[in-house]
Amino acid sequence: MSDLTDVTSLTSMSAARIAAGIAAGEMTAVEVTEAHLARIAAVDEKVHAFLHVDREGALAQARAVDEKRARGEELGPLAGVPLALKDIFTTEGIPTTVGSKILENWIPPYDATVTKRLKDADVVILGKTNMDEFAMGSSTENSAFGPTGNPWDLTRIPGGSGGGSSASLAAFEAPLALGTDTGGSIRQPAAMTATVGVKPTYGGVSRYGMVAFSSSLDQGGPCARTVLDAALLHAVIAGHDPLDSTSIDQPVPDVVAAARQGDVTGLRVGVVKEFRGEGYQAGVMQRFDESVELLRELGAEVVEVSCPSFTKALAAYYLIAPSECSSNLARFDAMRYGLRVGDDGSRGAEEVTALTREAGFGDEVKRRVMLGTYALSSGYYDAYYGSAQKVRTLITRDFGKAFESVDVLISPTTPTTAFPIGERADDPMAMYLADLCTIPSNLAGNAAMSLPCGLAPEDGLPVGLQIIAPAMADDRLYRVGAAIEAALQARWGHPLLEEAPSL
Amino acid sequence: MPGITREEVAHLARLARLELKDEELDHFAGQLDDIIGAVAAVSDVADEDVPPTSHPLPLTNVMRPDEVRPSLTPQQALSGAPAQEQQRFKVPQILGEE
Image 1 (cartoon, rainbow over the protein chains, first blue to last red):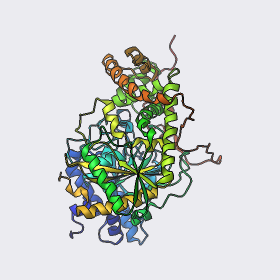
Image 2 (cartoon, chains in turn cyan, red):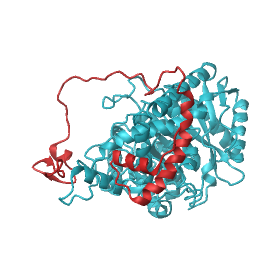
Image 3 (cartoon, helix red, strand yellow):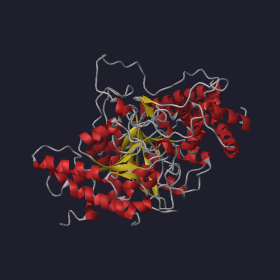
Image 4 (cartoon, one colour):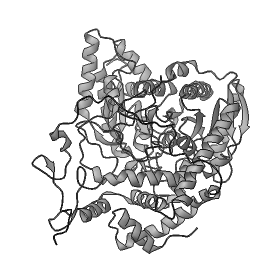
């Protein structure tokens, strides 16, 4: 092997570099896939990013790319690039568990639209990544199949719910990953691991075949190690899908061009005033304030913006999401698919359903199903669910008002750096605070990104910067993100992930 | 706003078809009480004249032409069934014996 196809060099390359290399014949898709499978074999026992590795399927897809090239066919912008798929997207013939015992042995008979688009784009799906059960959590500790370690410190959480996807990127097991973001599940794990994660505008990426948790909030999106790679993946998965009635039937903003442009001159940036103070770690705020200063130096106009209703976003979210989840998860009734427990011939269907859900759901899912049942019950509905929906309107109005005077908003992605595994596992309210800054975008349905902005001096762990753009202005995230990424890397002299300990 | 009792949790569990164990009832009662105490902050706006938002998009009903298109085969549709018989989902008894 030449230096270029050396295994370590292949696994540290960006997706854009790999795709260009394959297209130019500098390396084959099979070599790239084998290098990543070898990396997974070497480190995933420690990291536990993957629930399932599809070695044969990945190699078959890679061979098909190499054959396509040999035939002289044109290759797509991500052809042959390996990807780690969150285990919430259905994959025909490959297990899809959502991190839950209730779907432990389920093999879907169909592909999610996102899965299909990845395959059509010749992306190589390496396997399925670990997650909090049904995407409910901020640490990946709620997986029925054990936690994932943060490659920066394996005793700490990689964020959640998409901790398997973020850890796979930070551990150099894959250059691309797919996540879903209901309250921060793409952005918060990105912040914890010094990777890039984007929640597209609600309706930007099809939810067909994405196991539903809270349907008015759930949104799939790209995860990567660079802003440009995230944009390339965004372009592959986004766009109208007739199979999802909430899918937006409009052209996808040109996110790739925006990522290549990376310029903030004259851009108006709003700093969300409400996202600082008690509960925010000093090192997180230090890196955030430095990023604000950097944006000024790069030519942006930075102003402070107040969004007073954001202080109620967390409360509204923990009524709306559980309410939708209690209704959505009613489909797990042990009748048509998934686990069935206690069907011994003497018990009726209702009893079997209750025994199955007791055995198949973990604590956080049970808590949210009961909380949602409570919030939707007569007598409490107006006070809880009804009020939460009003807060949702107020938050959307705050965004609307802010975007009258600024192009994007910025904040820390999350108030603290990665916490130790176990620290908040049985303290739901402490866990929920991890999503404090990410939730408003889900409630309003706009677009947001997290990208690394340094290490907190007190613990040496990654800090994420959040950028928020209006709905259907996803390209602004990439324009701003690319400019900040380039400026920070020029300052550091290398990508932040190079400072992570070797596994 | 009222907190939540162990008995109410047991009632919610029945409504939600969760056969909770006794120790779970104790455990969840305390946690749900904490969570409900925190989320009750939304009720500050209960009396405000604000329209509710149920969804980020202005949704209209989406229709498609009434045309046959590919779908799952019966075998595929039944592939995840815990039990099946005669190309149907086999379920435990739904009505009592008496």
